[in-house]
Image (cartoon, rainbow, N blue to C red):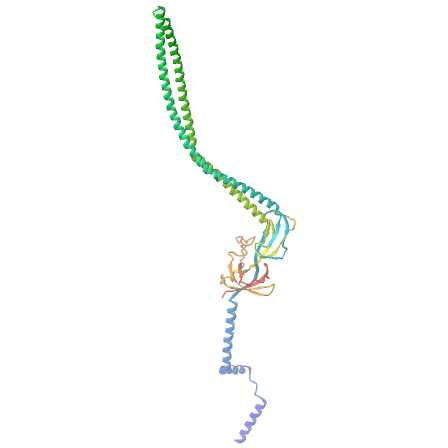
Amino acid sequence: MTETTTVVSDARSQHQAAGPAPLPASEKDLRWKRFNRHDPRVRVVMIVGGVVLLAVGFVLWRYFTSYESTDDAQVDGHLNSISARVSGQVVKLLVDDNQYVAAGTPLVQIDPKDYQVAVDRAKANYADAVAAAQAARVNVPITSVGTSSQVTSAEADVENARAGIGAARQQYDAANAQLAQAEANNARAQSDLARYKQLVDKQEISQQQYDQAVATAKADAAAVDAARASAAAARQQVTQAQARLGQAEAMLRSANTAPQQVAATRSKAQAAEANAARMKAELDQAELNLQYTTITAPVGGVVTGRTVELGQNVQIGQELMRVINLDDLWVTANFKETQLRHMKVGQPAEISVDANGKDYKGHVQSIAGASGAVLSLLPPENATGNYVKVVQRIPVKITFDAGETREHVLRPGMSVVTKVWIR
């Protein structure tokens, strides 16, 4: 028994010294599976590794789906065109290309002499029109008072003329009565003369009585002529009184047009005031034209594209240069239509500028109302039968946050890469 144990121990020692005998591949896999199945540390490592992989995958998925990015983007800005509002010769050129100017800085000076003369002439015309308007304004109350006096005077003249007609008619009636009396006296005197003639022929009366009858007859005949002349004169006075009444009535009708005369005078005053206002407008326009001879920058920015030169004659509306406002820049990013599914106004954005390698912060300000293809000069026509679906790009306006562009290093047209955080 002892010898057998010794032999076995020696055999094991030799076997261990020589190493275990190689196992078949299938047996190795089986032992590895049994080891993995029964070793708890391996399972923990595998579980932890799986969880870590899932967490990393989830984080990466969340990150890559939390934004939309495109490199089809550029910096945009306002290209303010500077043009002349009056024509004339350029006498001063105060800026050059790529020069920064503040708002209100003089850029170009056009010869102001002709426009100064126009201002002086407009001032003189305006002063003359104001004086004429004041005189016309004063005439309104004068005309009103004068016409009122004319009406009163004309009414009095009419009454006087009517009274004069009554008096003339009374005188005419009296003259007719005197004429009738004179004719009656004359008829009696002539009858007496005829009787005295017969009596003197018979010498029944004296010659003296006859002569006295002749004288009486002549005096009564002369009285008839005088009475007839007085009656005719009285008739003429009646006619004259009637004429004076017609004249007075005509004057009264003329005086009764006082409201129309006052209205006409007031209209003349209003016309004079309107003319003064027109002259004032011409003066204001002349002064504006004089101001327009000095062309100033409407905004602060960089001068570019200057085409005007000293001594050049410019015309109204002619473009002289442009001013790029560097304080009001934004980014136009052309995203694919499939990238706009979760994009909204106000979402934060990150802007990477290729020119300086810097990143700027911004936010989505608005999304265009149409794709870039529709807004192009020659929009596509898909009703030709050769339609091929193409993913369209929609311009998205991204504005910089406050203070991001204060360095004035960005320029319109620079290429950028935009990233909009949609989650």
